[in-house]
Image 1 (cartoon, rainbow, N blue to C red):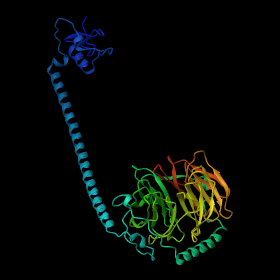
Image 2: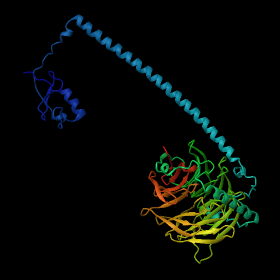
Image 3: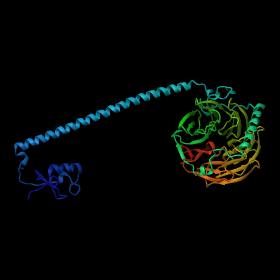
Image 4: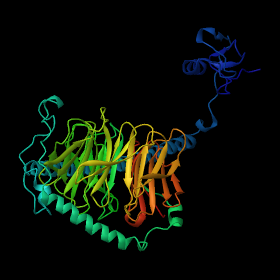
Length: 513
């Protein structure tokens, strides 16, 4: 009986047997298989070349195949081989032509990309050179006929760090002209509020609309990813499509939600930006930081137009007066300050001297008529101040932990406050008492409170974002879309949308889909 190779199924010229499986193989075939796999091809067990056993057989002469025994058969074999070579050559020419076309296209794309990059680099360089030549005050003069340029002020810590920063400005005093301006504005706003309070604003979002709000858009590219976190948010009252955010990356960013374009990146603070305000009538932005400065920015030039140095410690809160010309600020140095945004001068600076231990201030907010304002302290007290007399006229105790946010309702009657105690308290400014306490979840953190412009809704931002119906104080909707603590919340025009910022580096917009 003839031996057959287990791999080729032909009679082997040099037969060997595998002691692992007992099968016969052609020696050159099994050696190649062992070299590639190191195992017997029949059962997969480990096998090496030196384990193979030679089989001694008499030499056999293989008969020629019938196809090679006649001239016609040989000619046919040659013709078949020639045809195969020609077909293979044609395939290779096709592949070569395709490769040349792909290479030519790639080279064209590379050349076009290089041209675009070179052009953009040239434009960016030209824009930077143009910005470098602009005067810092250029951004604030527009729309401000009463502007008086202040003396040049180098950026805080620009030369040798915070220890060599300029000292806070001295008080300039509140003149009779300033006080009269405040009184006139308050009288005008009070009259308008009485008229407006009798009717619901046309187009105001209904409670059913609020309940159906869902996330419409989210933007995570406004601030640096290397230092994540957006700490503050404000919406322009005149055009609620425009917002400004302050971040951990020391920058403030102006963004248009309708065009989804960044309008300006405001760089200059040496520490994180904890508070921002968008001027309601002018293209100005205000920002505050623990670097002890308040900066006034021109949006069109993205340049700092004024630096207000009112405090010796971190600035913890800012609020713009209804006239649009004055700024209130609070600080960890226990003082609140009233400053002129046009000149950068501090008009008044006051600390509560009624007790021996004066706590640091954590936030500040003007009342809608601008004659009184509230401040929060680190010892859980909310204080109401008379701006004209510069005295503390009322205190609201009841929280535990430092005050994190305060917000006045546009109707002028209600004040909402929050602290590190997982509650939101509502105060009646006419009766000077707490009439409602909203108990939130255990360990809930509140970072921002905001009434809509009609005073109908109250938004709360912190562990999540919530909206309450005022008077009934009913919870309408809750958003858990942020993956980290929400730090700011603002209503759009007629509460038709809600904007929120978060430590997850995102700004989200909620509304009807």
